[in-house]
Amino acid sequence: MSGLGAFWGLYKREVVKIYRRAFALVMTFIQPIVWIVFFGSSLNGMPRQYLVQFFGTPNYIGFILPGQLATSMLFTGTFSSMSVVWDRRFGFLKKILVTPAPREAIFFSKVMGAVTRGLIQIPVMLLAAAAFGVPLPLDPLGYLEWIAALVLLGVGFSSIYLAVAMRSSDWQLPQLVANILNLPLMFTSTALFPRNFYPSWMQAIAAVNPITFATEIGRGVVLNDPYAPTLLGYLAVFAAISTAVGLLVAKRFMTAE
Image (cartoon, one colour):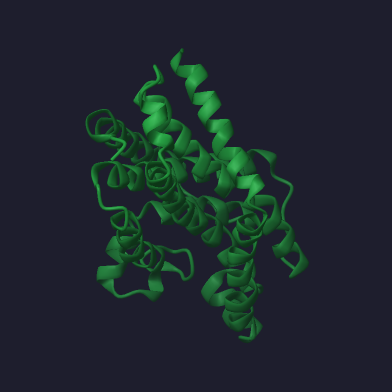
């Protein structure tokens, strides 16, 4: 069995799992939409001049749209680790490990399965934002850069959470780690508010938070706000380091128990 063939077969399984679980698929769409509808609408009542002054747009939903898509890639990374947990508990991982399928193929199938789960939210979120009056520019190159940023972000966080799940024999640990990290990572980025809203110590974290990089690229597309071209490079470095660590852990510690 070739590594590519094993990856493709396992990746298709991850995708089929997404579409077969109708309720989970619907919740994948609803969760980020709830954020932009309720949280976004709660600040849209500010006077127009303050919205433009603080957020650079008269519609706050347009400001948080890129942040919510970036945050969704963070949260979908959790699903990659939980997929390994459930494959262990139901014995599927044991069956795969006795085949010639390389561990790298198993690792990448989980990572790309989680990334796919995050990417399918993009058209739904864009339609929801448009329904709330967010003007979406026609910028094909910008959208490609934005999608590339989200893919790199998803690969990075999925690799990190997979490394935790593969290294630990405690099936509850990956979820506990995610619960501890996800919200601080979201709130110490620029996903919800501009960096100048934060105290100095939070600004320092936001400046190196990968969610900030992906958010600012998306915000540059939606709000026509120029961003540093190096942001995509920073995300590529983040994804490469996280993937290298995840692969190392997968080779050494991936077990069926």
